[in-house]
Image (cartoon, rainbow, N blue to C red; front, top):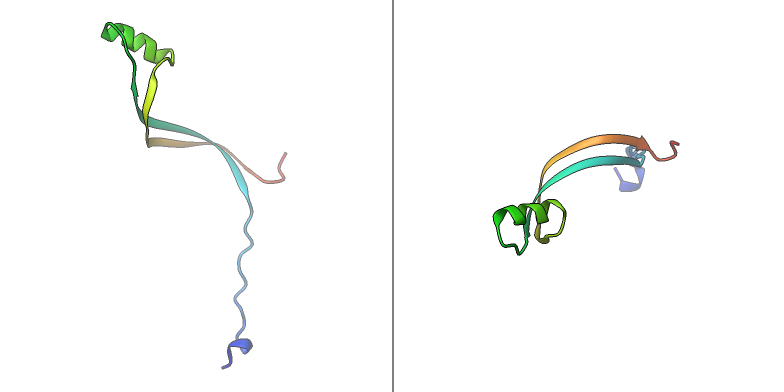
Amino acid sequence: MPAAARKLKPQPETRTFRATMLVTRAEQWWVEAESAEEARTLLASGQGHRTALGERIHVELEELSEDGDA
């Protein structure tokens, strides 16, 4: 059977969905401090420097909506 005569299988229609995701990563950070306690305080307040982004260790879907939804 010629290729032009074959019926094309209809492709499913796709839609776009948007999501709000909660993502937890294991990152590596460093900070200069005089003690471990000071280092913990500085890191907890966001004053450290990120060495590596790290890998995702947990992903949770918070909200899902289809484009066009209000």
